[in-house]
Image (cartoon, rainbow, N blue to C red; front, side, top):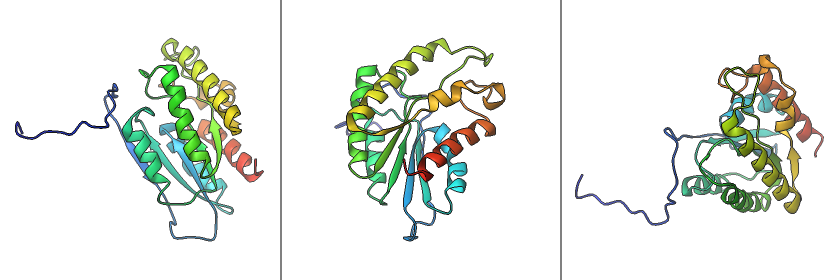
Length: 209
């Protein structure tokens, strides 16, 4: 291995998470009869995907791209942009905020702006606010994430306003949840929580908003 060199050109010097992952799922890829909807996000997006797909089965095909990678990374930027080379989407639901903790909020904002300019030039785009993170009691905010989520939501709302994009306020939705809709890690949600997110998004899309 000592004779092998690695090309670092174009790589960002970012702090990675201990485990990084990417999952993409597209069904009925040759079906041209229905419009396609893309859900872009993280594990929370991946968890409510199947319920959104079921709710929209009569009106659209639903694909998703979920990843842990930092929005400031070449991997994220390249993966999302490549995803749009494969299919044409009528609507995209974009949800990013609970990864890349080490990225400061100005960098977060500039990367979201760049990504949403790219996506919204190709499809009608709905921007989700970031969901709350609770501590192990599920009764109080996780203090490490509390302020970061609030600031990132301010940034994403400002970007949506500037680009004239619709907002799906997932933060406000999960603020109404009790413990039955929260998973024990304080980050994820139970089936009931995913169902609430999916129903709201499906209603949003069915109304053509």
